[in-house]
Image (cartoon, rainbow, N blue to C red; front, side, top):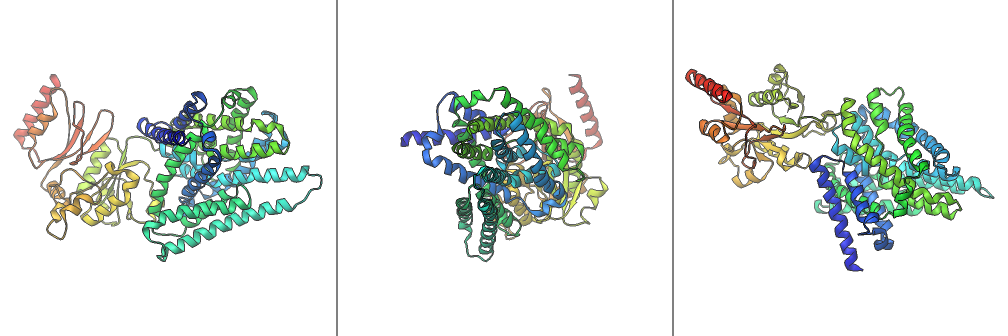
Length: 616
């Protein structure tokens, strides 16, 4: 038993992370790959059955994982983000959720054939989208800022609301159908919901105060947060089922808006935990389904219900609730289409299926099939369509990977002009308005402010940029920038100008090589060297390699003063030169370098050589 359980844990972990890697490698929706992987090893081939082998631990593991995922998502809900999207988010989370509940319940009754009682319970639950499915989609598709904020906030805020709405509908049904109606249970429901919010707020405030006053050391902060999240969820959920999700959401939002300096560090840790949990839990849920559940998906009433939920209920609830909010038709269309259901819908529907069956509602037996049908079809359709639809509606930031440059000076402006000519988004950030004058004069997109400022997170849209270059004359600042943004951009996409000219002035070679990002270009070319070369007449020059004109020939013609900057592959991939660069330039690659000014004779020879290469 132990060995088989260990085997299942190994399979679940490998499939979950493997699915995430395949999604990243081939730019596919991760949730789609996870769903297919879970179905293959579970009901189709019968390799694992987590629900059977985990036994009584199965439900608590799923519940705690969902609580941590929802808390991690709510840590990103800072009210400052609501500056340009607050009204539509509020409308969608209230009026839109109510419309979706009513329309979804009517559809469940008239199309899926459920009784009114079961229809209103499941209608409340199916308003959820959730961070378990929305976050991977947002990570995959580079949506414009406002649409991304709306989908993120809706997914996290409406998640606990949907679960509570289902509980509320069940309590209303119990009250109406009772022989001697008693309003006590309804009062307890509202009291328990307020209690859950209060617990979340108290836990968030208390934990934040302990962090700020130093009562918890740095190495215990992340473990303490996880333990308090589990406590917060359990305390509320024991009071009334499904209020735990509301409690951890309130806790996360409270911490996110306290302005705690260490929250950003914890957020990176929680994101890693969240990715692991989403990957494994999705595999566990899909692998635990039965073959009969899969076969019943294709019955006409279930397919009809799913299609109406996707093409009628969701779009109508969004378009009606966002009237007068300032959203464009394209924004409403995208938000009205993207609503994948995920882990919360699957887990909570199983709970309600059991209690509704116990209450005598026999039609509740199809709830698991109905839920999985909606989850699977929305995950597949929305996962594969969000990319091309957002481009079609001009709501995508997808394109050539952009470059964010910190520091405005002569060299960075010329580098930005060169990158811009290659068709890439490029932005120069600097806290000095005077330094930005050259960038403004050259028409380069710029941002006035420090990248380390908290306001930058809400005022600067960094979605189009995949590379970060720290090119200021302050080497300590460059290292700090690289260290700060490395978790977001990745170790291979963060660069800083060589600080080696500062050796002997209090800087250590060991520290210089290990702190911050990769050394840009070549360590022998410092910040001053790059700018002095431009003053001496050096120019940016692009050269295309061919079968006749190889990289070896190209290198032989350049002297030691030439600075190799970056290369562009025929596929459009951008590679900055650094000591760690492993790519060997080949035929078809374009190399951009900073080269000495050509003498008249050299100009003629270069022109003749280019003509000869062209004729060959």
